[in-house]
Image (tube, rainbow, N blue to C red):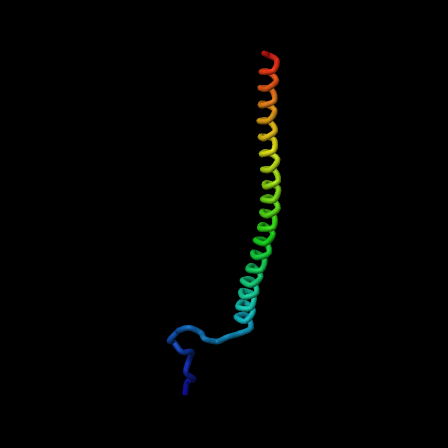
Length: 86
């Protein structure tokens, strides 16, 4: 008689082929790789931030020393003015 034709009922095709495996593997590699790249970049930014903070700490000490020196100079000038007025 006649051969039955394709099944008219369409649903999800649950076959699994090499393309699916490649897509899943490349997605997993991409996620893991992006995690490691982000971690490396974050560590580099933290090192850079630590170097900047160390320079700012030294700069702060220089500014404090300059302010103390300026204050001492003003005091010496005041004493000199008083000595000259006598």
